[in-house]
Image (cartoon, rainbow, N blue to C red; front, side, top):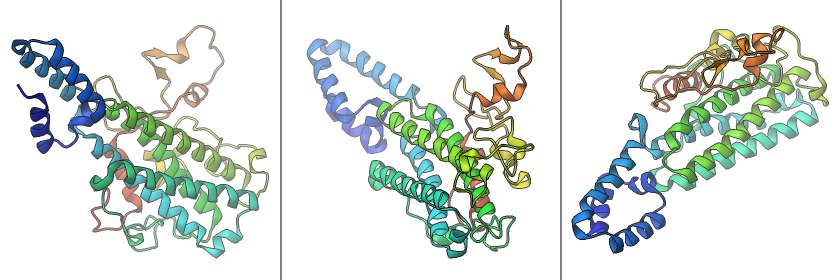
Length: 320
């Protein structure tokens, strides 16, 4: 039995077979040793066991490349948004020096995420969208959506930025179970996830202090937090910056076809690991919002796409 020929044939119909197993170098190393240790009669069983494991690790029939291209799509959505904000003179006039510097760092981060994901995907990467793909007013191409002044009004700009970042954080968390078969890619994705979370927190801090505040982090959060949010998500965040459009960002996701053991709860969730935190000993007096603030929830691909397409023009297949 020629194991390498078998792998080669499988690779023709499943280019990601090595991702499912391990790195190409590792799998060939292990299989070389396998051939030396097993008798010819035992080889078919050994090979069968390997591939049962490989394909059992791929939930929802989503390939690693599918997940990475989904992440790349969201990174384009964010990257183009910050590029447009940087290019808007009226918007820049309304931002403090501190906030402009922070937004430039975020812009560069998002551009680097695009570059990284394209590098990982190589020829499998999606075609880069044009700037005309997006309408950040939420008008689907009319330029007159609920965020019509997004590139001239700093408050609106920061509200949309927070919405994009909060969505991205939940999307990366939701994609993690689909990358479990490739620890290297999973680690890289989680590294991006943590940066997106820092972006989200920084943006919320900017909104709390005001767009033109050079000491934004010293602002005081005030109920209902839509205009001056806390630095972390509390409950369902009162629907976000513009509840009519942004409430799904903080709500429950779609559990249909979710990986085993995974649910997409709303950000107001207070049950973690099967334990209702509000009923645990010595928790009397803690509001439910305090428990929800201590955890962040994942969101499924279908829900994230629906949210993201708020900013995609009608007729485009991007993020469809």
